[in-house]
Image (cartoon, rainbow, N blue to C red; front, top):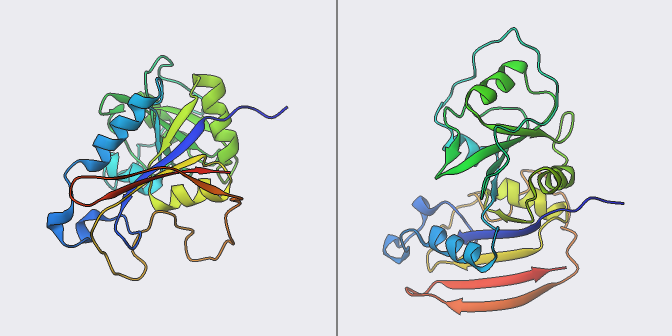
Length: 237
């Protein structure tokens, strides 16, 4: 019998050409400060216990404070088993970090304790550093992350029933292609990026990995926000 996974809602803000790097978008006057966070809070308020959020490796390195650092060497050897600094968090900040690139030097993001999803190839020095920083971690594969297994672990071990998927495009694209996204909340700002190859809502890297396994998308709601942004919500099937 397959395990249960959390309900995954992908929440993103983009330009009209689907790009997500706000600093590149013009006109600057059409961007609403903190719009992403405001709508995130609205979505969380709709569903009790829905505050946990998931981001990818690039975003992890933006949040990590040890920029460009590695954790120091260690003589210790750690089992490749899930480890939790705590279990009773109201909401988790969860990051995909297959090879253990982020040196955190912090244990939470905005009060939400950090949990990283790793592969078994990460060095013991990284595990020692995570433990010292009180950053929880789970394993989901030997060399590549098994996303479905990771989500099942989050549900089984921590009771996470609802997860906000919030970028970047690589993480969003990976979960979409794995058939793990249940809903998309997309805010289209009246701005343009216009660049070829700029990060987008769903990325698949340089390879064409084929179409995602989506049979249908149903528009659940739509709303015009102050300033001309449009908020679309789609149920996927």
